Image (tube, rainbow, N blue to C red):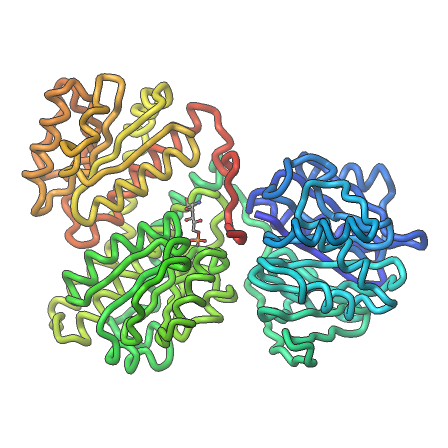
Length: 605
Ligand code: AGP
């Protein structure tokens, strides 16, 4: 999604800005741009192609400057055309980049038109540029503070003005923004990752903060306009760019990294001890009587799977809700419920807003399960568990999902132990299963050639159904999401028992029905559901555990999984679905790592 980079220095800063954009590219964007200040004012280059094209323009145009801002845009208001690409100018005096959505832009645009401002773009961003320009009286910091007081919605912005050649002003509300501190130079970015190589010292701005970067320092005002001191954090973890290695796409690499990612995630777990979730977790876990899980997309499906573990192992009532729904509905808060937010990025706007909404309703206990230790979500929760999946570049989440499942299983087992429902022997057994999981995953990954053979068939389809039962129903949902995200095949998932309540009407020879078939208590029921599909000429593609006795037959294609893996089985069963989606997308020739219309980190509503 949109990305911001800004810098004030004594050297030409263009290469830092371009490199920053390149580091944010994987998040998805459809245009990009950069602006620097020179004696005449801001000058810019913009492209509706890749950052590499922008770099070429910058080189050909000799764009140079010591103060600059840059942006990758993921279109919300207005098509991805050059006029809508950022930086957006106001009267050739001011340049601005913006992440987020301004909800009251229409009213502001009318007001600004009344003052004589001409609107060139279709963006909501242009109102911010003209608004700040209209309020500018020789102090950009003051003008930005006055302007943001009039904005409704979410924003992170970076602004330059021709009359302040060594100043970049930033502000944030609902979208992340960090300051990077250098020696005689300072930086701004929507993600610290963008500034790797330039600094390791960061200030993570808080909601409502406005900052002013100059050559020798940074000043920050909080929402009330009071000078604010913010902690400077050393973040060394942002090494170089992630390499693709022998893989064709990052998604494929990330699928194959899952054994390693899970090994890293469980490295901290010698026992199911509350302290894994942070200081004071033991007390919090003793206080709570239920869980409320909030998340989006794939992270939501990990929450749905966890509900089965939490309720069966720990016997703790668990509600799982899509964050974008929860934040806007009237719910009945229970202060004794632990709010668990799950997010790969920790910056997803809907999940963050849902967390704040829950806190506003009086939920005092919160836990983030997250892959980014410096993210807003981790900073805004009482407890946290980091998944250690490593950076996930592919838009379609894979290793983040399986490591979230490991984290959530650990949570369920920890709560079960605290509630006297897990004895020493069971604890040792689950720990052993977790440690064996990477090896078990490797044997599932070895099924890739068989899955490639299926993917050829799938690549010619336009629709697919996914079936699962019990804790494998969310796995079917995740399989369908993966397929639609990257292959653009319409896919839906159902609990297999629901088939005859409607979706069976869709089953014909042309409809592949992917079935997740673990050897669990629901196997016989699932076999009946399989027969219902066969009887209607449907084509079944079944991932069946070794001991299920489901075998190839007419209309029945089977890939044999390892032996049933008990409660952890969903973690194994999702992997062939990831591979099926991946190879189907490859066969269709889509842009697997950057599927159309999608972004890696959804920082707008
Ligand atoms: C996953 O394949 C998707 N791209 C998407 O559903 C994602 O899981 C969702 O946007 C939530 O992201 P988060 O985990 O970073 O909060």
